[in-house]
Image 1 (cartoon, rainbow over the protein chains, first blue to last red):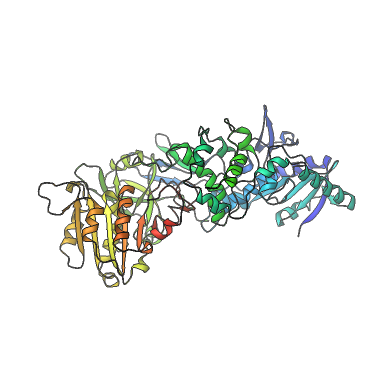
Image 2 (cartoon, chains in turn cyan, green):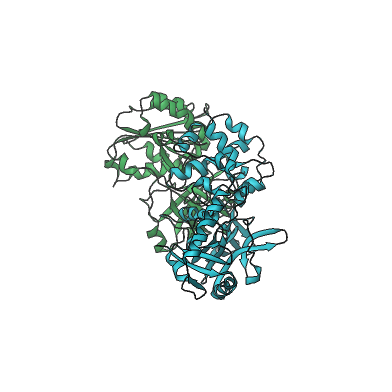
Length: 347
Length: 281
């Protein structure tokens, strides 16, 4: 059962201060012209305006570069392996927008499951997600069309909703309810609940209807995509793609990575780094064979993986409607238009 | 939580030069710790990631069989950074290994059946593992007729010469070797694997066909097997894709909704026929 409380806006800083004492805190930070989701040292760093961060929250649990282990090596390749100790402190991801919070649920499926990825899972177990609802969704956004919502608490342990001079705070999980024990939170009242309801409705209603109408992923869409796999429509869709991969780096659900050794004279580190299905080397085999030789196969893979293969394997869709790839694509290759074209297309 | 990214150490016990072009070597690796040996329970058709410290790691199918549990063998063609540096290692050097990975050949299904193994070039390594597994005294009676069709471009590029000599001397398998072109002193078949398969394959009844080799060879062998009457469920392929993690996380080896590393590398043609994806024949 969810628990709901109120937090006066002037008390937010004190609450965050208390979290900073014994947690590693990530949240939205202004850096130059950019607003990034990044590590936070002090409460003053936190940006509390509207809109979403340029990068998603995924890097707080799945860093762009992460050391798997280090080793000593010498000429005869004898090696001594050192695994980095797991971080003792718990993490707080503050100000995560509902789209990014849902993205984390997909990462949980990928890195969890029957064979757990210890680097992700050990951080994740000790992480609290404090979501921030989007009272004023960006016009690029389309979370509502994909089963999410600007004020959805899915994926958040706590969700803060701005209702004027205070936040209505919903706790949906055990971790979230534990945080509500903090004295900063007060009992809710009927007036606040009515106000919250209104804010939520307004947020949903303010979303760009034309955009939501484009993104129709109906029953049988996976099958439909499979039948289009060899269709020439992909030539048309991917013609403008330059394969830069920015969509995959900014995407809250993209999780592909490379494993590389960084080597010094007698020491080395095995690291993993974000990789992108948009790059030719991603699938280039040593024999010379590349099963995805051009931008067409690579962009098709991105769409198929997100909207067909993931759901086929019992996972949520690999798109949460955050709109980052739409805004940042240098050639305006718009996933909303791609979805619209594909759904309307008859082979 | 067990960490699937951490290799354990193995010592190179022997390095066997396999081919006349000096490009393929088989590395015989000995476990250093008993714990690692006991932990590494595998079946033919599975693979492992082998690390050269200071260079990186790459996936290789086990060429050895679990019936000789004290060693692992990997046949390595020198082609990139990791394989190139592996080739420069010597007896006594140390490498890292993590695995076993992947599904392997469905041994339980094979029991009581005839087997037709078709291997091309370097792709023969896991079929060598399967063959030696089947031929082991403890296992031979569980399987019926065994036919092997193994081809390389030239006689000097055939691997496992010692094994081939032993197999030739046995009466409980049919061994067909083929090379692409006539060569001096060559007494086996001459011709490409699909063609030779057409002429020497056994009856499809109660038989599994297991194919491993370059994509082009698998592509042209499939219609031959279908013409011979093999059902899609009874044709198995061992696929290759570029891999990194080997455990279905890093996202690069999709064939449709399946990952070659964790759902494969062995798939039946009936499974593959249902998948979209690039690695199709």
